[in-house]
Image (tube, rainbow, N blue to C red; front, side):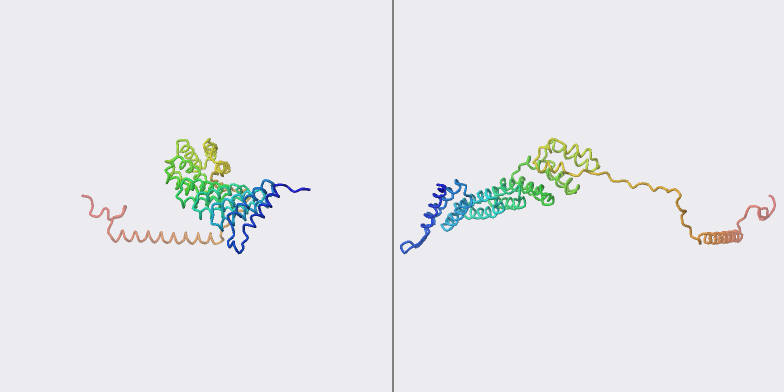
Length: 343
């Protein structure tokens, strides 16, 4: 049984590359440039033959040769292709480390933008099955873009960070990411984007259960919103303030929110509706209940109090009569009233 001709061609390229790396008395330094080219050709042959592991091995060797020759850009390109081979082989977690290495090489070459795109490409591949790893790649890509003061590109990566955080229900970090994205759009004065993000931030704050923060976000960024956005947010916040679930439902079913990014639209559907505060029920009297407890000392205490009150009342009356007599004040019916006779 004859072998695949592409495999044979690839093996021949590997032999040529190994010859280029050998040294002799007349050849003191390996020919890394020629070896890298041969390994690249071998990788192409193995990829066409769908021998992905051999292809990836040749790409690693080509990248090492390019690094030895300080051709960092070409080395990074080899690692990017190796990412695709890892995807086809099902080694998704390996893709993240390859992307980090490729980004570092791009930065050494002076092409940080290409490095950010390599991280973005890797994150897209692994996002569905490994969102936590994709999150790290997007965050790194945003930082790399900011080193070049590329505000627009950094905002795009931060937007992806925020959406993954919402998907993972990490709402505290998501609120921080949305605020960072708003700050980046403020630098470029992109007001429509800020208005849309204001709605997203209100939804995230409500998902956190923080109505005050949601209202504060609307007051701070609501002036960037368009009329439909303002009406939707006002209705939404009013519904939460009044604990009116019907009003909240109408706001969340508005066309604007339904046409937001998938993660925010799903968040709106899953947002817990406000529940009216329950009023404590009035106490009811149970039938055939036992009578209230009365202390056996209660009757003696009330009798003693009454006696004390009578004695104190009598004493007070006697004192009042004595005082009136001693002060010479006439009392009705006394003889002093007619003292001296009639005029």
